[in-house]
Amino acid sequence: MPRIRRWLYILLICSLLLSAVSCEAPGAPSSLMPEETAATGAAMSVEGTLQLHFFDVGQGDAALIQFPDGRNALIDAGPNASADELLQYLRELGVSRIDYLIASHPHEDHIGGMDEVVNALAIGEIYMPRLASDLTPTTKAYERLLTAIQNKGLTIKRCRPLTDIIREEGTSLQVLSSDEAVHQDLNNSSAVVKLTFGNCRVLFTGDIEAEAETALLEANRDVAADLLKVGHHGSSTSTSEAFLQAVSPRFAVISCGRDNSYGHPNAQTLNRLKNAGAAVSRTDEEGTVRFTCNGTSFSQAA
Ligand SMILES: [Zn+2]
Image 1: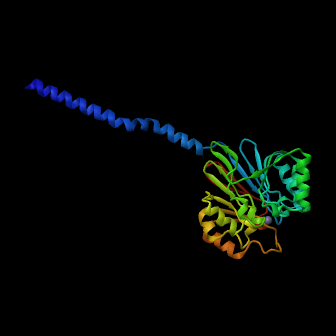
Image 2: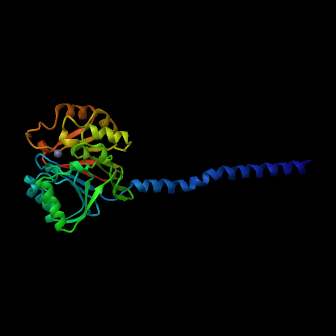
Image 3: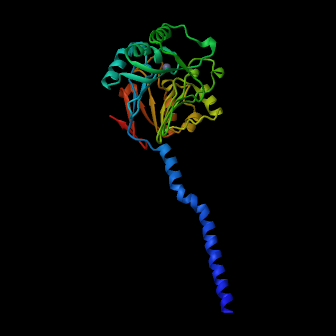
């Protein structure tokens, strides 16, 4: 029966080949896998270097993001007293246009210099947080800013939870703030914005305190970041243990004035940051703090 045996042999070979083909079916994606991985990788891979500047504006906040394609985002503009200095910084950097201007919240130490920025530079989009109606400020600083915006024919965009200011391959700038209805004061109403550039993540928290931090955690926002702009100038009421654990930053920047009367930053807050393993930079000690990110890792610039 050699013929039968030969046929059996041929059948065996065929079945082996078939099983090899069927085994390859899941493997077929394996030939697609590199593309899929590349696509996923592409979402994370970016070209060029991003620059971050946390300006020394005294007691206040002003942070500039310079994207490699030349776009600029300015989050807060410090108090009015340092507006000229801020504009000087921006001029030295060659910044003549702010593509995305974000006011974290309308307190003077964040928007006092913003009217001058609006008057002096070309502005793309302006974002402000939505506020509970009884929190709308009546301050001169806010009035000046609204007038500057109106005079330029600009329209304010309100930061709703999960608003995408930028959403592009590998790069995003997203509002994480929880809904304004839960906040009873301006600090906690601050727009919280997360920047993602490749694998580099930065969280800008305005002046939020523990209340808004808890609301973000309860809303399951992805607050994890490599670099944290510490909330409310390092005040004792911000940077709660649970929030810090969720953010898990390697770098932390505190923007505050030299010998400020508020005692910012608070010693316990500094301890919490230290214990969390974050390297802290302070504008009151170092002046303007700069970082660069190539999409993979951060470097602190001199
Ligand atoms: Zn402040």
